Length: 323
Image (cartoon, rainbow, N blue to C red):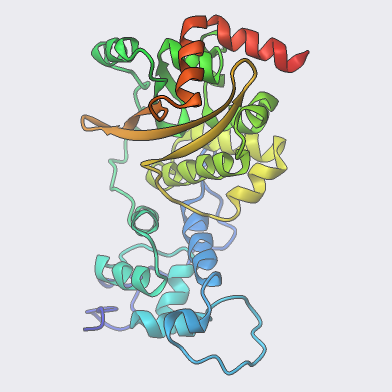
C-alpha cells in the first residue's frame, strides 16, 4: 500500500502529511544554531545522489544524466508520492510530513537504521515550548566515576553530546593522552582528532576515526539543531580543518557500537584493541566506551606496560613523539 501523501485537499499547505509552502530560500537559521531546513535538504540530496537506477530496480537507458544518482521523479515513484511533494520535502519543508511518508522515503533511499532515525529527527523535530530552555551542563554520576576507576587494565571513558569527553580512568589517560591537563572545552574528540597532530600519530586508521567522529556529530545535529555549542564547534572546525569540512559535507551518519582500532603509542608501539560502546539507560546522550585486547596478545602486554606507567605514560609518549 502506498503511503498517503495528503488526506486533505491535495497540495494545500498545512494539510495533514503535506510539507508547508517553502519559506524564502534566504531565511537564515537562528544565530548560534544549525539550519535544520538546510540539513534536511542536503541530507536527502546526498542520499539520493549515491543511488543508481540499477540499485533500486529501475531501468537505466544510458542517457546522459545531469545529476549523479536518482532523479527526484524516480525517487518519488519509488516512495509512492508525487514529484512536487518530494521536491518540497527535499527543499527542507518537512513540517506536517507523516511518519508513513518518511518511512517510504527511507525505504526508497535504502537508508540504514541510523540514517532513518536521522531523517526523522530532521523532518519531525521534537516540539518544544516557546520558552527557551537552557540545557543543563553534562554531569557524570559519581557511581559511574567509581566504576571507571575500578576498571583496571581496561581503558574506559564516558563521552557525551558533541563528542565531549566527560570522565575517564587512569589507563585511558595513559593510552589517549592526559585529558586532565586540558581545559574542559578542549576535552572533545572532534577537536582532538582534527586539531591535535598527536592523534594522527596515535590512530593508524586516522581517516576512519575522523569519519566516525563527524558521523557522531551529524547525529547530534539532527537531535539538537538548536545547540549553540554544537554550532560553534562545527563552525570552528570548518574554519580550521579542510578535512573536517569535506567530511561534514558528505552528511554521512552511522552508529558504531563496537569495532577494532589500530593504534601506535609512542611508548609501547602497536596496539590492536576492540572497543564497545555502552549507551547509558538513564541518559542516552552519554555512552561508556571501553577498550580491550585479545588475551595473551602483544597488545595485552602493551596495555599492562601502560598501566604500570600510569598517567606519566601519556606525557612520556608525547615527549617521545616530539623528540
